[in-house]
Length: 396
Image (cartoon, rainbow, N blue to C red; front, top):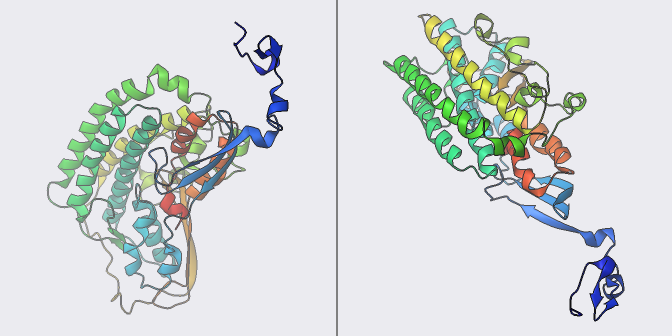
């Protein structure tokens, strides 16, 4: 068998040892052991218009750089050129899967500077909108993580079930995705006839599907093996890196703006803060799964306790509405983490400055780049989706 070629350390041709380094000079040099791989910006393993520039050695990622900028929109500067009420139509587009926290933050920032009182019924309706949006966003996230693991049945289920929530939004606001509903002073219109019953039916349906989600995804042995111990955020680094929301709670920190800095009527509602300690891919999606139960619990309390009364404290003509000079920093617990707006008014009809403190630049850029180093290429997508970032918000 003189024609058999073995490995470098004992290669044989015609019974003679072969030194491949002499045939391919520099073959063992580090720069020749690495190669570049680009994923995105249009790829099923990427969450939205976003890209990864990876350097690998074999199957292991040794360098990682995120590549954003495919959705440049300049929302913050646009808001400085538009009237206060006109901006209500802009802000939901900053994060498509969970748009309502943007409306909430913007409205509350204006209200804080202008000292506007919001009717109690409107406060309950705002909480209803925020929790329905959280539910829809988490269902989307479950499907995203499952898809990266080759479990394509679940995204078909969760995206379909999410549509039932979007139908509620359409019934209430006339729009499925960008609702333009939470406005300074309250909400745009009251709940339509039959809406409360539709919400209860939708919650019951989603609850009936949760055991199937659990069986297919969360109790799946293959999923557990693929997601456990992967993409671990060291708890001692979580706060240092600016991690918030479910990603922080999965690292063992029971931090939630709804409890730590209550807004609207959250301090009148009972709910728990799900926490895990493993801080890996599985822990992050498991925390979101438990949050679904808590959101359903919150929505039912809202429907039971919502008072009668007006839903909007009428404001002046938007064309002439001048907000007093001042500034405000407002934060909200979105499905993706702590979301904040800093607004400055100089007393004119337009905001002087608006800055969005989103979560996605932290989770989807800085943290992701750190977690990808040392990971295997097949785990890159699941790590990204488990962080649940929002590319439009990175490019705001």
